[in-house]
Length: 244
Image (cartoon, rainbow, N blue to C red; front, side, top):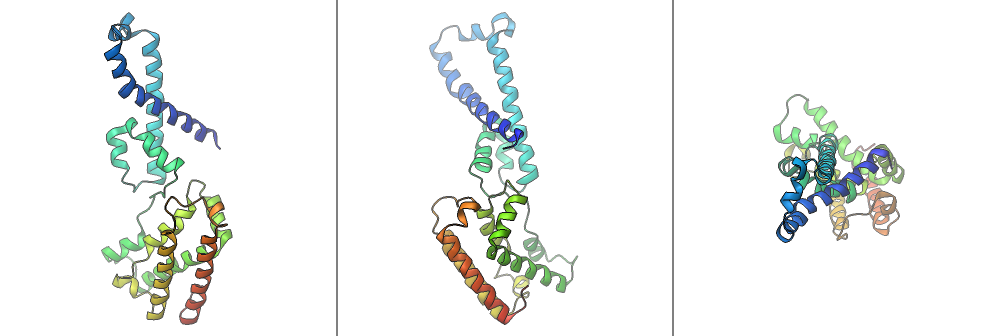
């Protein structure tokens, strides 16, 4: 673990302690301990309590700034941007827990394919759009086939939860009801892709909790079952179309 990651885990814990103290413990102390405010204001605020709380507040602020930096670098299209700015240090531990500890899928991109279809972007030709669509879909299929490619993905993007990304990227790319998408594939290919989509949905439905990390996931019977299905899907596509 890198030094900055160790620091952020420490500031995560301090942020939680600070929030619990200010919003839970301090009100209780004020109500139960006489002269609390007198002690806090002693020596015009130049006392150990205020010094410690200033340091803690600075650490919590650092953790919040880190979460903002992380969001804009890796998760900038997440809806978390609103509570993170609105509630700052109150929400930053929640955000950190979700993206760094639970490793939910990050939203660092708006799917380009979806934008092009919905907005009917005229900046590329129809042939270019078809190639883009096919390469995107077939690239995901090839990624699903190769255990090595999935592990390389993890090495290249260490913060990514690759197991989740395998499913999320397919969901972000597969739009069988949109005309632009359907024009990129022949009838047989669309039927085969629908078969693969069903297999993906059936598989994700078997997990009641988050998927395990990719190093563990690729050793599960579920992964092996779906990997076998993907190989079958690619063989079918090779017989009816042109997949590289």
